[in-house]
Length: 190
Length: 371
Image (cartoon, rainbow over all chains, first blue to last red; front, side):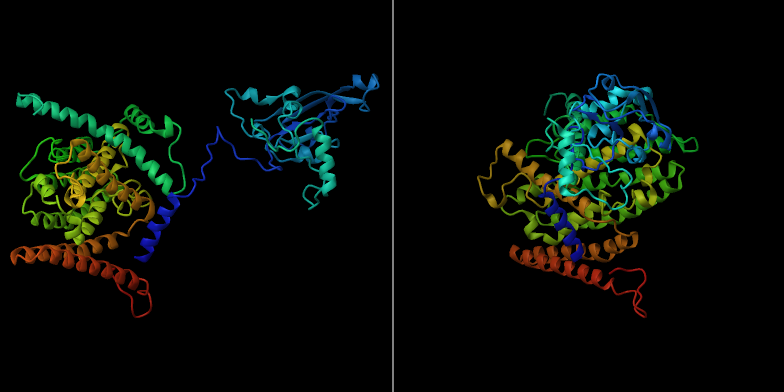
């Protein structure tokens, strides 16, 4: 009886509180920095080339075999502009197959691949399954276009050991990642 | 009179009812989802139209275009006619309902009696739906609907009759005119309580949704229905929601009158409509609020609450009214007695609910009754 009165009082009070609903496609919650979307490649803004050297370690470790990588000689190395002898030639990731296990990020020797921590790494609906196979320009796009301003770079091999970057290290990472972008804004709009 | 020829007149009035009622129901489904959403800190429908206003229309189009499935073991005519048996009586009882002093379909001398008699016919439809579906859950739900609706019909009718004793008329217009000074909720607080609770049960909405409980009988009599036939049950439910709300505002809240004659008693039509809309909305909001707040009753709690508490107190209200009217006591006595009886009813319910908490101690186990 008293419980009944309490119940109707509770719902009436709830009616005057702000609704918690987020109107998803038009307004989006901010994703956490470590949000694990789908893997994308990072762009080296100083050398104007991808970090990826095409070493295929990610493709070999991928448990679902969703990646295809080929390597070529780096023309910028011949011109003396870059220290990378080899550079990625072709890179395909089948997003329909990827299970977001993060292993490619952990094994990458060049910190060249990250999990997309923006909404574009999550929103995947396509009319054709074939459109989910991403090639190199599409994989580089989120970082290169500045849309993924602050990627979370997982330190190699220590992801699950409890290690965390110190404050100055984190700052350096943010600076090297940004180079002209707005580094403050996490997980920008799609 | 809309037209001179009585047949043309009747068809015109029928057309107005047939257009306005589904429209009201379509909007009410939206209102209900909005209200319950806000009561649960959600937004409710927001996508179709501004603030989701067209959601009801979208749902209607969806329901109309869905396939009308009939199980091949179903009893064909019972199954197919049941939705009509549910809807038609409810819409028929709208006929006798005055919306304002002038806006009405037909003013009947025995309007209240007509409404109570006709609207209770829809129980037959539930039992038909339950039997005709050839489904054990539908049958259980149909039997539950029969039990609950017939049980709560009695306190509802008794409370309404107690109200009708005061103006000594079953004509709804006269009942409203008798409240031009004070609405009957003051004289008949006990009857109002019983009416609100029994009305909630008559609408088989939570916490009285035992016949259509999703988690117990997977939708009760409606299990096998789809598309247009299912939406007719929905139509019946919402029309009876409107019916009970308008009836309650006519009987207890003074209808189209200003309470306590705040303004001149000759109210303009626009003000009458606003009065009725506000008063009926209060009832509708109450029913939706209860739906958002309270969990479902157990079937034995529901039955014993009706027969052991609501019905005796409804008779008590009739006895109080009879004493006051026969011995010509002043009306204030009625306010005091009815209020005291209402307080007693609340206390009895409170005690029963409190005692039900200790009934599993060894030696004190009670069986069968919550009161």
